[in-house]
Image (cartoon, rainbow over all chains, first blue to last red; front, side):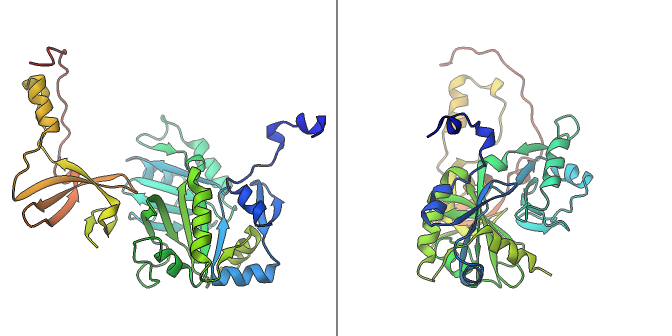
Length: 241
Length: 101
């Protein structure tokens, strides 16, 4: 290690996902973006896209997210022109791609997996204070939770082997949420299809992400599943029309 | 598989829930000695028949009340605690006395 390396400040280094070691061991092509150092692809685009359609796993730990809860949370979000789902365990997608997930009667999780609505999350977090948002409290979802996505036609069947919730596509429909246990780990499962490709976001304690990544890869190996890069996932999102 | 219906999340595997003891009506601690208050908080009646119990859905930390028949182990209904505790109660602060009174 050179003196120059030692003198680099931590702020000058790109943010890394908690799954960085796993990406390196899977020989992912890493790319630096505004979010940090993310796996762009695992194979070529065609292979990754075929994988995503069959059964793919994406690391979205660095994507922006935030949370608000309390009796005044709905009023605070509506003041800032956020459309709400209207009932617990439902998701409302905004025009800019932001997902507003209602987790209980007065708790909301904002998820920006497209990285196109990060300005809106920043605006809301900056606008919030105890004085101007009575009975509304911020929840540090960016630091407390990690986020993965499981895509593909075989996704619900693979997840059903780990989760005791009825995930059959006609029962667990688009924009529905299940808060449940996966091998005794609390997880939030959000169905949000990407075009014609079924897609499930999984949020769990950020310290358990490496374990969850390994468990999911193991469970999906029987069905030919594997990791896919962020570029491929964003291409799926671009196909939504 | 044994199932329980959470008022927030619907029908789920019993493994997702935590038992939280019997539901007791709120009583003013200033009207009791410390021993009587400890019994009120920690002791259960353990009645045979219909009882109200606290249950928690672990993934969401959502506490609710279940009405269960302890003889047949049949859950008759589950509901939000706000249906049982309909008004906010504030008790007067009392000075600490003899803990064994």
